[in-house]
Length: 530
Image 1 (cartoon, helix red, strand yellow):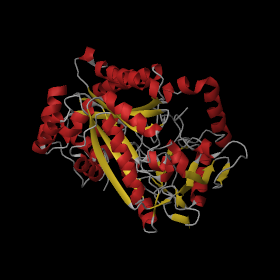
Image 2: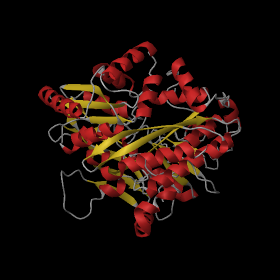
Image 3: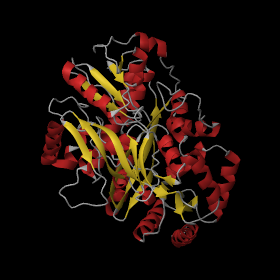
């Protein structure tokens, strides 16, 4: 069963290695363990539902609580402290598009606000109910999850929007195909959620972001049904798919998604190379991308993230041996780890690996332990989020943010974001451990993914205030230094205050006009995006 107040399946644990615990204590300070609230107590305190009885709506307090929050740090603080705030008045589990239309009708009839719910993995507040007098109906798409149409010749597949990553991939792989979309939330996030938030998978360099993979689909909006045919290309006016991509549930409920699929690769390998400095690493990845070397993935860690990753991996003696070898070959304390993914035909993988290693070597790259590190990353790529549970239980809060900018701005932006986070709590006497990697790459720039850890306070409100200070400082730095407020997490509520800096007033008005056209009554996911 999924955790009600943390990440993932209750049966899966990812403990903090002793060496990693000592490392964090040195960097941040001794942490305090905070006992979480009991599920039974939180359920008992739930307010009664304001929705009338309906065949499609579950009004049980536990079901409502389990659909009240996503996975942002404010969500964790709320749930772990037993203060979930507003929870939905009911959770519906439609099985057909007709059910979805009936729920839209119900919401209109009773004046309810309606929140589409995919996997509940949002880290920016997409699924959180708004306050106010209107009842809230959360619509879980979990039961609209099947493979509806498969076109092997055209390499297109249509899924119910509630299909979660593992189920979608299993149905494709049984037929010899893959979508290749692997966000870190892959275990629980859904294809509808990927479209609604403009998601990007770990191997987007090879397979593409969701906007390239999303070929068409269907959206049920209060104003009617929007059909999006799956054409290979079209010049028939603006592409309406772009309106739905990133719409975050404000326009309607995505019920079907047609995606572009690919045959399963003959070979897939992940390797690590260590560069002496972050500047060497940036020069390497920029050359790799601009030379169009056919890689499926790149990931470049700063020196601090490289050190943190190695400490959190455990295997203390093996890591010490690896570091001795790397130092002998020129990759010392400032070394940065570069992960490379090769996917495709055997001949393509061989040629791409040869080209990539040659480019990395020209920038003083060291290959020691590369295959072992690459395999370890591949094995644990979807287990790392479970570390958040163990770190919280040890007394540490963990959060992430991401942005993207062009290559010419990238070094300044990394420095600005990390400095803003490191100094945000200095006046409060708290240290923050900050580290970054470049996660997605383009010929003209790259995305930055920054993680930061700080100690939990005894009072959950104080922990929340600390997060607010950190989030505001980093967001201001992003806006001031030419970054997008979100590269792949979406806007939700957490990033909404900074959207105007990117879209401008006219752009925001266009978005508001779209919301009014699709949803004249203002029922859909209010407060998100705009």
